[in-house]
Image 1 (cartoon, rainbow, N blue to C red):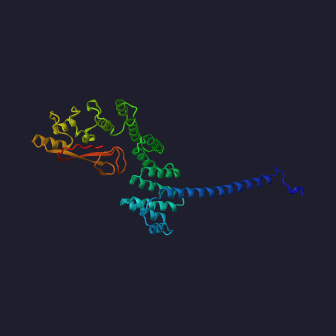
Image 2 (cartoon, helix red, strand yellow):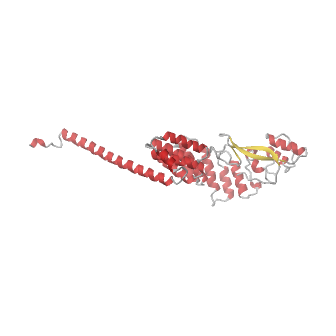
Image 3 (cartoon, rainbow, N blue to C red):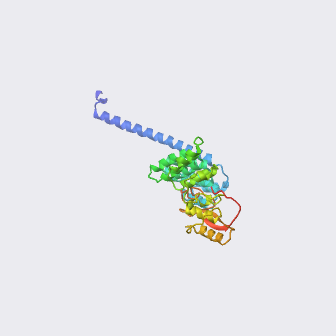
Length: 341
């Protein structure tokens, strides 16, 4: 009977204890996994309920799309087709149905990212932010979500948060130097405690395409006299801004002087032709006595080739920074003064 009990120094006792511990850990892990999945599913359902406030789909269509016969890839294709046609509400509802069907983290991340993009395109920046943050919980290195968050925070004037997101992208070896410089310029420009002259001095030290135009825009917005401005950008980056100036500026620059001569605001006749065809055409018409011609402007993204009617430092279609090119066209002169930013 004494041999029935094992001594704690017996190797068999140690083996039994090890097996017991492994079994206990396995059971606890299983229980934790069950509760974790239950909580995760409940959290997902609450998330979907929070956003499922639209009535773009009928009850019959909802039931059909929610049926097991319609898989997630099919829902994704259907949602994408609605996005392309501009029907964002239906696309959102379909992505939410797909999200309710998703079983793994990879699927959920993919759906959340696309859902965030739809909210972003539809102009629901707050909801887009929430959805992208949810996607980042699943995979913090989601570049698509991080890139869109940068633009969201920029549009919401939360420039410090935009910088934080850019830092996360930089850790993934993304080229974000120019964007970081631009966000810093925005922080300085929107600082109510910094005098105007100091703002310009600080921004002038930053390095991003369009920095000169950015400073010029600040002068115009703040109604500061242009005589105090000394960082004129190349004319191809500012021709639309200076076109409506009542008096000539920066005439020591041959291109600036050529434009103002063509507009009748400078008496200094250019000694050589301008590198911009439209300015040469205006000068030729002026010298011929025809003064009813003027310029109109459009803006084309060098990256995605989209054309828009207002200037922005970031393309409103592909969100590329510093990619907008100014296109001048000969047009009939009007008395209207257009604001281009």
